[in-house]
Length: 512
Image (cartoon, rainbow, N blue to C red; front, side, top):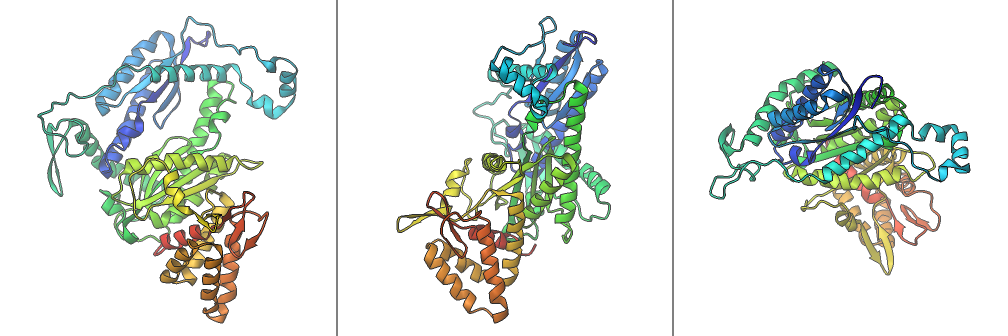
């Protein structure tokens, strides 16, 4: 608590936010859920300011604010009412400082001795060391986690065994009807409100997009079928990006104003990076319905649906612009499947894949942006990426093979994109499929087959194709052992190649 102002820190986090947003794969449901949560955030901000407090951050389902100690319980009740009024079932767990308790103090540790003197002598370490305000935030975050873990009840609507179930969520009882193109659907109040809000939000999306790009034609899609209209094989990409080590940097601000300023800088930088990346990636797009749907910009993280052919250029430009506008790196993942694949599986796989991308981003001497991806030509239900990535591993005569080099650092990802475009333009689709099949047979069979294919190419194209294959070898890093054309022997004895990644994106970028 700040004694001079009588304000205490209030922290909140929406419970099971992904379950609420991605409960259905229908686009109006996803758009409506995201819009309703943003309306809750806006109303909560107004309530806190009206009570004499200030909001430090309220985005992506997370809230941190300063509020008068005398008003804290009333505000907690008001926040619960706001969520119940707008979403019916979504809730936010809250935690706040005890006005009567002393502020948290650092516990004794080894850093109190000579180690502490060395840390304090280093300016970079001194800037990252906990300060009184960051200790208050960390202490409150621990209290919030404990409150979320101890929740004893989750609000639900009564479900009767003999009642008709909602045709959208199949969880709650249907109580009204939605009249859609496929006919009337019995739905529950939660899905009905999300759907109506999602339909109404289309005009707001159009206005917001035109503010950034007035010359962009078309209109927001009404469903995923319209979003992938014109896309080869109806391929949809789910993009999830998150800033690297932003939580650590949030420990540096020494007062609420610095925290608020830093949060706004990250959010505004991410928002600008998203819209600029979309403008560049879609510069040649022509169609009636937008080939993307922006689900969320939650500060340092974004969630986006987009046609698969535009996913890689968008991700690259976003990572580049995010670093330019915020000064921080980010990790991004792309999950690609048929647009009928359940969105909740898209999200789960992306969240799992993001962990690997973040590990790659931190693996070098300096933090770097990183990118990974997963394409499922024949999607199977799953929430973990490893079983799907194991199909890129095989053996040849006792020798382990890795047919992928992902995740990639940003510079490598740009090179991957350039190679995929070059391969798409120089090698026919049927030949690329033969190359991909040859890679699965092993090192020597694939090298011999592809060299034979190159030898049959026109004389002017042979040198360019050979250079392309050698550049693909560089995506696996500097060879520490043997290497053969586009294959590299790693320090663990396994042979790796990035050619399968290049071939996949050459296919995905078709018609882009």
